[in-house]
Length: 419
Image (cartoon, rainbow, N blue to C red; front, side, top):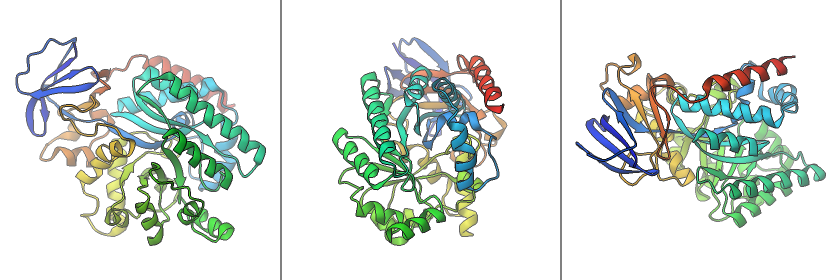
């Protein structure tokens, strides 16, 4: 029968929105439809839900575990050792916790790489969110490990396909050029082509990564990937970070239609550098927004991320008109929808019913001269009242089913890891 939202602000006008199945069937005034769920939108605004284009959801378990460290030491001395202790159940609850945080801050879709991804998929299925999931492949140029990692990646792809759930999409996720061998990267490319899968990879995150690649291969990271024919025709590559790119690399990325995911909070916290956004924009690349993990951010709130994204670019450029609010909001909505081939990112008839109702009585949204500016520069996730994904209400009145149990389980895991 559907969901009927009455008297909600949409594009500066009061409208009704009728959702049938998983899509928006009608937008108009005084819609009269029989509905299973009726929502009073008075005092609310309807906006597209947010898409987190790069994260590691289960790492919510490691928030505040390893702060104020350089990336290489952060990974090798703290993160990877403790991750080796995580069980499948730990990862399941970490992902459940991440889904809860994202729902409560207005995100309905995320792009994730980690391990024990069947557990993450289970958490996503139960949450009602969308996710693009892949086994984080790291072989460190060890042949026996590469075989195991290839097997794990393929098994997850097969597992996700068998779920036959349109909200859970498998992707291939080589961690990076410095953790995956040439042979592993070529396998990823071949498997992605064969199975029509997107590829999600960390790329040019640090200056050290670039220098090490030049020393080892004689080429910068993007040039190296092109030299091994990683950017196959039609392959959808989504590259997280992209900070240390030169002009030639940007041209290569544009030629191959690569999407870049900007992660400003994580980049600032780890001192990695600043995304060359203006150069990417001028070249015509699609740029999305991600939080990275809660171990390096330490939040999954995409409203905060939008503010960081814009202000960092303005400050770095010494120019207040760089990355204005609407462009930043598009990064978190329509740009990401384009990257993942989703019919959402805007609230229109015929699009997927992935949307939010934000509370216009929240102090952070007042006065409301410009809603998009308020959403980017003032709002935080607690401005979100209602979350709808795929035509299903995931949160209403800021209540999410099962949140107390999730927090209890996460803190049990915290006490175990703390020992």
